[in-house]
Amino acid sequence: MSAKRAVNFGAGPSALPLSVLQEASTNLLNFQNTGIGITEISHRSKEFTGFLADLEARIRKQLDVPPTHKIIFTQGGGTGQFSAVVYNLLARHRLLHPELGDDERRLEYVVTGSWSKKAMEEAKRLCAGPRGVGGTVKVVVDARTFSKDGKSFDNIPPHAEYQFSPYTTTSLVHLRTRPPPPALIYYCENETVDGVQFSDDLKSPQSFPFGLLFPPDSDNEEGEGHQPLLPLVADYSSSFMSRPIPRLADHAVIFAGAQKNLGPAGLTIVIVRQDCLVDADAAGKLGAPPIPLTFAYKTIADSNSVYNTPSVFAIYVAGLVVKNIEEEGGLVQYEQVNRRKKEKLYGIVKVGEEAGVLRRKVQEGSESWMNVVFEVLGVDGLVSKEAEQRFIDGASQRGMVALKGHRFATLHTSFYFSEKLTIIRLFLEIDPSEVRPLINVAGLALIVSTGIRASIYNAVTEDDVEGLVVYVKEFIQTEKESRA
Ligand SMILES: Cc1ncc(COP(=O)(O)O)c(C=O)c1O
Image (tube, protein in one colour):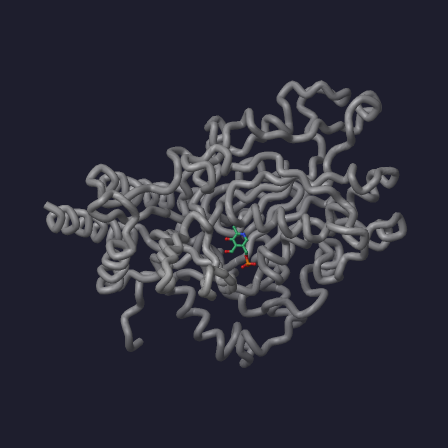
């Protein structure tokens, strides 16, 4: 290989293990001695369907997925699932509760960051108007209310603040006294942009509040310990296969795009509880909107994920990655390594904070293991674009790349009319808190600060993280000296 490989801290697509890339490159020419490359082989060949079944079994084993749940492989990314969960779970709700009106088909969203907000907005868009899919979106909690500045996603809210609707079990007593369960309850386990994650320690105040949905002494008639089949949906896109999933069996749907911890973009993995594999046409007869076939969980599951041509290469690479995880000790081992990685990185950021050079963006206890976000400060103690650039340039000289924070690539045009002057401004829309436009009569200056985000997914090794820690330490020292 000619050029040295960089240490890639990108948020996705992101780093993949070198050994996997090397094996994949060999199989691009000849997959399993078939004489045909992996990107050329039929998705219905016995070699590929065998590989896919093997991948399913390996994920099932690593995550301890029970037989109540199917694992399906599809396309369309996390964004596709923002829509798919709405269609599928509204169809399920229609079959379970045909008598209800649209305003009683509630879709409840826990909003803790940019991605859960996007998912909630997509549900609202799909539900809106007389031609909408027939549901009502409710925000159960918005984490911005509990942020340091009142507008950022920097925390997991306290359990007491979640306003889930009361729901029923199948008990007739409850059916008379409480509203029926929602069509879906949604959360994003790791917010890639904002660096906020639910704790996997279920005793932590920053864990997902399962106890509110599945009360331990549930007063349902089925007796103690009964767990109602709630339509709980989780977006695990950026933490899938980084550590075990708490209370996996209590979820209706868990989905993840592969391009963080698992493989190339183009593959989406969905773990679906079997009662959510619903007959969309039967729901349609009761008034539910038709589900596009490539989004229908039952269609995909019934055909073992080859209803149409799947993303063969992405599936293949994901298979190699999961084998690699197994060879390196499995998810339990990865959990320990990932814990050490994030502790080391947050540790040095804290040192930078004490020195007045860095500032963490996320409140204590809500920090992501996968996406570590912080800001670089200037002499005045404010976020400094110049200091941030120095940080990024220094990292890049040491072969560490993709450390710049997230940007939303939506182009916006705004027109401002002043007395005699029309100022046209074009800018990349970033979170408003990150944009400080300074306008004067002579023109426009736009200060954009996105901060630093180091994504330390599985393929970013402990050595890679230690290399970054050494660099951050040096940077803090140099900045301190230059300010003395
Ligand atoms: C947590 C999360 N959800 C959803 C998405 C959207 O995924 P995709 O780009 O595959 O549609 C992303 C993308 O980075 C993400 O990080």
